[in-house]
Length: 402
Ligand SMILES: C[S@@+](CC[C@H](N)C(=O)[O-])C[C@H]1O[C@@H](n2cnc3c(N)ncnc32)[C@H](O)[C@@H]1O
Image (cartoon, rainbow, N blue to C red; front, side, top):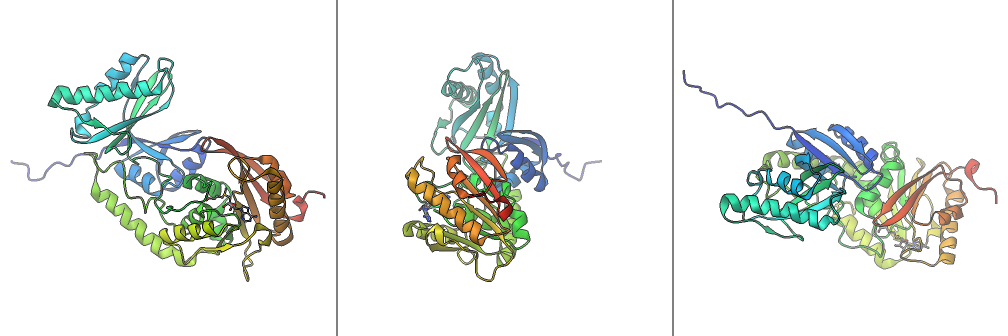
């Protein structure tokens, strides 16, 4: 008897890797577990997880911490240049993209046989091009700036892994920030800082979020998006899977539609989110960014000096005061900065009993001017600059003896 039903293929289980800033792997692990993803392994700068395509798409749309998400194409032994080329040559590239597409190869990690990561990238590019040329007589071109397909080569001591970068470049570029001040925080670093300070839990109990030196408003906008359950990837225009032959538009659109309706629901119940900055141009930029994120009605930004910092009127649920003040590396002179941190600390001691506070700074000795004993210190990198997140529980028991 003829078969009447078309046999359904079993869905493919993929291996993914979410790259994070150094030190943020465990925070991303927690986040991906809360998103219901199956984490298999966590490192200081990333998390491996597995699942069907929707798992990778979920991470792209919902991870606030990840910098990129890669879908594993192959992992193979590579102890020499020739093995790297051979391993890359064996990937069925023609199943993933086509000759008219452009591509690029980025490299992370290190291996003893690789003295120059650019050369390793070149070997993978050669393998891709040679495989296409052998089969089709033509090869895809390389475009390092805006490729259709971005590949990630990760080198380990004995193995190489090649991923398709399904995020298509930095996930920190959320798309809401067109206007910045002089030293903006990366959006995913701002999210990491807020998660580390327990902001989602504070928001759930009605606590406020204040940033008295808010610059372009990154901490405020990321904080509002977290509290309102707005997917961080909702405003991104371009993704790395768009030209990939395995892309499933239906799965992506379902996730996007679901994220859109969630964002509409929860905005109305946001707690007070208030920023300040002494620079009027920067205040304008923060307001424009909040507008672009659809949060203009929920974030207030005022032009004022940190010394005038006060809790929002008629707000009694406490909250989090967090800031990334200037720290001298890129702006500000030391004496002025000492006064700035001490003004900030005084305002906290006088008016914020019972609140949590935090500063993110590349100059931990300036944090010493706050006059409050820190509850914790964590180290993160803001680009190439080593920074500390210093947290405080604002209470007379923790004030330094003057
Ligand atoms: C490092 S930037 C903050 C960047 C911000 N986190 C962002 O992502 O755009 C520090 C900000 O502190 C502001 N600032 C400096 N001194 C201030 C003061 N006394 N009162 C209020 N804001 C001040 C600066 O204008 C600057 O925008």
